[in-house]
Image (spheres, rainbow, N blue to C red):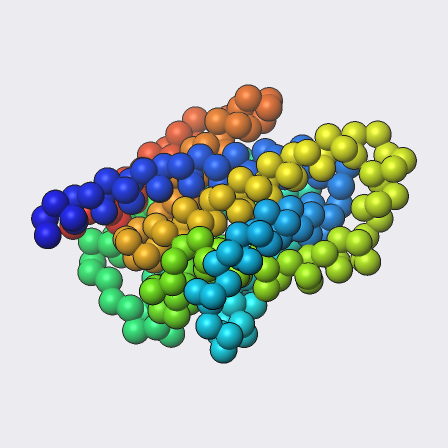
Length: 294
């Protein structure tokens, strides 16, 4: 039993690391793609790529999905992938990629609040303290400037709302789908929302026209392909597995590590870094320590 617990813990750490790197990179990819493509195009194209990747997988795994739960799958796919993809693309076209990554760190707090209010989840004071410390670090990163000045950008709110949706989805996955295989579950949720994203992309945007006539459109679509295939399809499988073996709170801690990755990519792309950001990152790391401490 102890060996199995240790094995699960090691696997959780590995999955947490890989998912954090993949999702932490997604913000710079959104930024690059948004130079040419609109937020609606980036968000829907990201899901469309994942949809194409998951269709053959779903066909193989389809018997593992009961027919009576497609409403829940549509809900999980919408609040866990479709709507956040649109919201992050909207924000990513207006604010720095590193800031989008930083703001993700509010997800664990929302995870606790949603779990406590609606799913009867219980957390001890150590985890609450870790969440608050991590959230404090995220607030410093997102809103504090050198000299103590506070700057609030209206485009941070799409990210905040997206993290609330993520928190709700994490709890739904844990409560409703804990016994499902991650691969089958991931494929089913994306297949459920794939037709919606396809309709939005080809029926509600100028995507086809841009691909034919706008310089840089194919490069932008390539960035979104990485987003869809790695950031949505592959990472979603890993994240669902992480939720199953470690629970929604530890899984949501991926958003503590993601800001570090997003900041590093931002630096590489020439985004400014200030001393106060180091303090924010320190707060986030302390939060991760207490959240994962037994």
